[in-house]
Length: 248
Image (cartoon, rainbow, N blue to C red; front, side, top):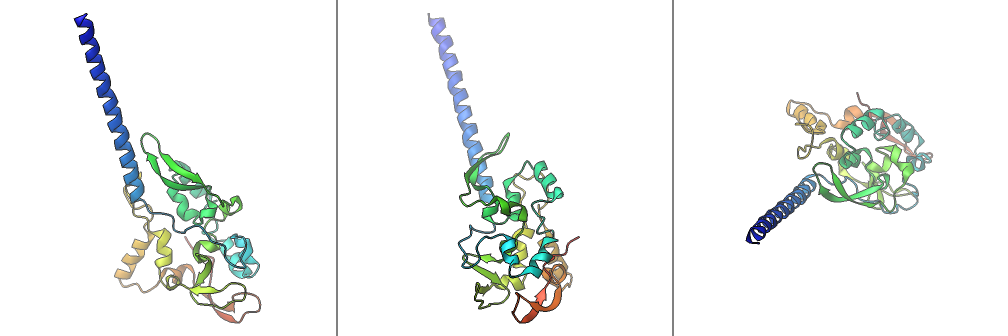
């Protein structure tokens, strides 16, 4: 009888130790997941608020008044940022890590889920996510669409303030600098990444170019001046940049 009790006490102690170890592993996993999520950048744009007289956030809406600009954009890498075979291939290779979509589909309304956190990391990623209430599937393939750069809260932003009867345009100084480009073209993270280099380091390359004596902004090469043209039919011509967003 004593031998039986001793054996069961040992088994009970081992069981308690095992439960304790599992508990420690769970706590460590959750803490590690929370640490990783806190270290990752958040989405570049908040959810859109209704913009007066604009309607759908699709580029096709913008094309009604700005056909030249949208036609240029349609042939750009920005327009193809989410649909290109190169991105889709790498996205699958990275096991569809949600962070990629923050730049390739910058509007909340382009992504089916809102990510609230990371719950688990190893052996596979478990996300805490909610369904996007105003998800618009037709936007998903538009990549870096017009409002990805030009939406600011409930208004349209640009390099100049314009009192338009359709929708006012507020001035944003980021359009005159590289700050707007930096939003997506600088992603220096290593926690949880499968590469030992910045995921996106274009902005740092530009900083090195400026340190070596360069004097140009990103848009000087990627969105060069194309002369005077009307922002919309009937408006006076004004200096304008190409929206084809030249790339390699």
